[in-house]
Image 1: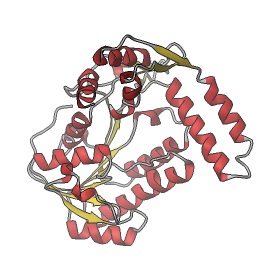
Image 2 (image 1 turned 135 degrees about the vertical axis):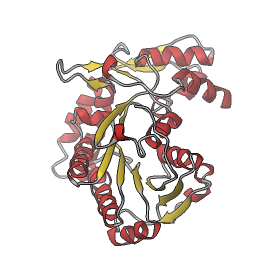
Image 3 (image 1 turned 90 degrees about the vertical axis):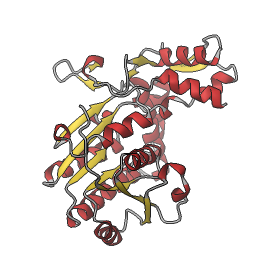
Image 4 (image 1 turned 45 degrees about the vertical axis):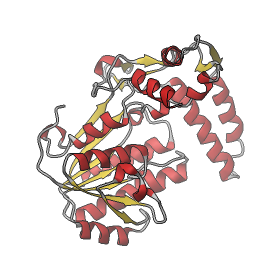
Length: 316
């Protein structure tokens, strides 16, 4: 999908204190749009350099009345939601991925917004987890709302593939699941994803569509990520294998107490989340074969995972 030239728009960004939300706000400001960012009360997000040039407003997404007032005051043409539950636990997912987004959509429609852009996730195409079902439930409400919408489903973020940089720099082995080839993804940088999302504004190709998107290919396995990171860090490739069955075992044990304790239920869900990401690729599912397909996963942007790793290593 090619971005279309757009006239300056009034854009309201929810979730702007998060990694992707900040990048989206910065991109919009750079493109000349008038940007309002929604931050949690008490947040220091307005001091973030990425939000320079944007107007910050503060409100909880659990307060529909205040949210409606803020959107009425901002009079945005476009609303972009980058909000997402942090834990993925069922209660959090229902409150954020579904209910908060729904409150934002209702406020947007009351304010006469013409286009609602939702940052979702590619993993919802195979929903086995609470947060995936919550995201899909809101996607369905958004599609049925009558407003012009775009649903963006990115693959893995660079940030999600950066957790082992310190391990490798310290000479420790890179952790893999199984042989390291169980899953693949086409990771996308914050900046490239932000440009893609910004490019959906006033773009007929993005209207009323669900858009999966990855970064520059090819698709990369976990073992290949480890090899790449070791190479960039100047370390010999060393791996330690963890069996995904450990997560299945943990989930079964924790599920025994889920009926009497919310703590056990939440921890059981965390084990299911860990198993999912250890065994499922972040690529488009082929509707014919039911298999993940790298060739069906669109690519976008210029920054590669190698670039990202090199920058992290250089920054120490």
